[in-house]
Image 1 (cartoon, helix red, strand yellow):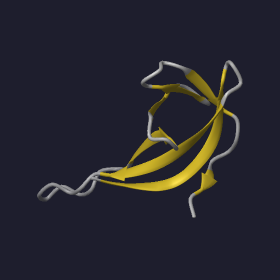
Image 2 (cartoon, helix red, strand yellow; image 1 turned 90 degrees about the vertical axis):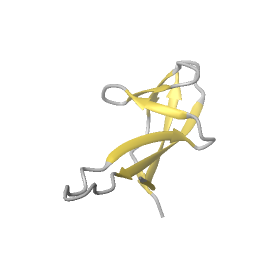
Image 3 (cartoon, one colour; image 1 turned 120 degrees about the horizontal axis):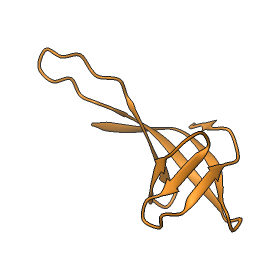
Length: 78
């Protein structure tokens, strides 16, 4: 499985802290005669902490349990 950085955006928690979130597209390798399955989108903070997408613009920092809200559009990765 390979992960490719496809974008990034800023999100803010309830206390006003801003987080830089990276968006990755992970491809699933083909298995035997089966074609590649659809890519999966995953999220991580710039410092490496995992992020779970909830609903709409809400995300959850896995290790801390903190809810953050996307405040900018995804910027494509260079």
